Image 1 (cartoon, rainbow, N blue to C red):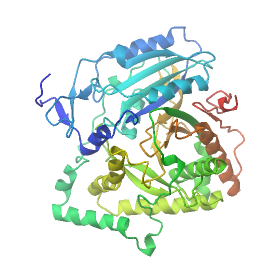
Image 2: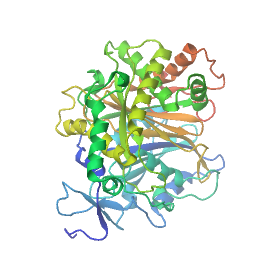
Image 3: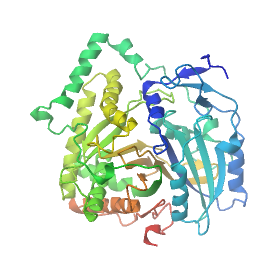
Image 4: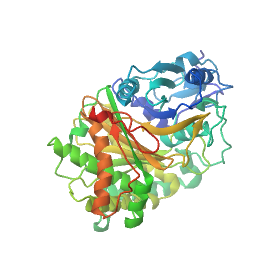
Length: 489
């Protein structure tokens, strides 16, 4: 392979390259989705095998699935991707079966193991596992892809594009789906500054945006800054062993709370996570006296931008874990998030990504130096909300029952909580360091109970038709899933 760059190679943006630089054996930097499907009642015994066969025989492969790291000069400092046609689909698409009884616990053990293993950097940075033997006539697809290739929003769009809104006989893998035409937009990393603002104006705007991070005025009291987080048990040493748990709640309940309070779905989701964390850490005698904080990823992708590169930034929010009352806790979170969003919107759009990257830089450097777990944390936890398909989707005739995101704990950050809005529910994935965060499944259970507590505090009656449950991997709900609760076994 040539060491010289060619027309088929492209250098990674600074943000994409950072995800490669941050990766270690203990901190794999890939994101994943866990898709749970119902096998059609009239399907023969070879249906799942046909999914594997179709996934291994795509009619052409598109970007970023055909991209691998290139051997170019200064690759460690400025890595590049190259397009390849040499893809071993028997390697990238695995066929697995769960041991009996094939419940959520067995699935959880497998997914936790798979999520702790590094992707092979000599190949395109993704793998897919088709998993049969799941009880209730279901199967799962676990698809992981390196964060250097794409962010969560773009990754979900690629999965969604390979599905259909109605059951059918044909289907295709995500790596075969043809990209939609993209509207020409400014580059989102770096180059937009020179095109949109003169250098001195850009520098002036950036300094102005950073001022509240150094010195807050009284009217900016609700604006949370990095490194204002208290030390907590979530911010210790992270190893490569993972534990995954899931939960699902009806968005109808979230919307009723929003209508009564004016809070956004994301504000309410943060409040549920905060309530669960407060209860869990209280039960362990480890709740910090000061309010814990969350870094909340925000998509900075411009409309029409179909590139696979990352376009994500962070804002910081209080979780108000020092407040016992669920309603007052949510009000504090709402004020904190509104202050963060207002500050981000106050700057030119082309500065938002450089600004949020600068905020995240100190924590990233500490992670690379292996010091993040020894010093005050930049945040206590990362909590993310990704929009998904509004309607039920299908892989051929198989119905997609749940779409769980599985993300990245980083050094000094033992927990990541991410949800996807899918078909009238919030499907929530809890990804934690197995050694630093015991009893992760309790957080999933407590998150559902935090929703009931918030409804009770606001005097809102819970819909009787909705039932939520949780376990180490799969929840149960009245409409889409079985009612077994592995957490109670």
